[in-house]
Length: 338
Ligand SMILES: [Zn+2]
Image (cartoon, rainbow, N blue to C red; front, side):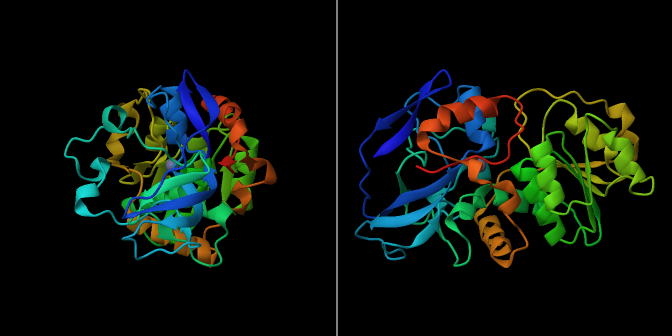
């Protein structure tokens, strides 16, 4: 099968590698489409992925082969490549290790993932793709589940006002998940025009350009001088965490959703007197994937403004796409169709 193999030094090679054969409790999934995720970009950018790795974890596909002991799937079933409830012995360290550190313990090597024509999975790993959710949309279930998880981690209450810093895919899903959870108004800050446009298309109540206006001042003004009840940092770049703290209301909550790999400057004296609560949110759990698919099916979460025909690229364009995404990105979602 054809795969995009990471060669180190920010290079990929399109190579023919053996198509895996499912063991007794495994299934083979033909990949329909696979999103490029910020964590993949970081794995390449910070050289966490060892050469020889095939990345890609945000995918949808069809079961094409099942192992002899597999009973829950049959050939032709449409699936999302994740979201299954792991048996205790397969539980991911990020969910149960008492001192988990993503930077030093996060990369799970040795596994061929979905920047390839086929991917091998344990039978418990995928979840069923409901009718009415197209395969291309389904490949974004994982980032959508991350936003669902972030909103569920937050203390968001019916009627709250929400601020979101950064309208990349996760920020745009947070916007929709916060709405579904009962936010009365969602105010967005995003400098990139394509992303700001998508936020407006998803009916954000305000889309501010942080290069042109003072986001804190504007969000405070729009909330009668108080600041939003909950602020999600979906950018995680220099300045946004401090900005979230500065913007949120007294006793409000800041939720860090983005994963910053660099130290971030904060100036606590500016905001600590307002007794702000901080919550970090990490990835998603199986329940979040099912909620995400439910929201996608009911139309409460739309993928449409995130995807254009130009969002889809062949395997051959992966290196170019990663090179672009390693710079501060202005694009929306990129999806590989192997
Ligand atoms: Zn991801």
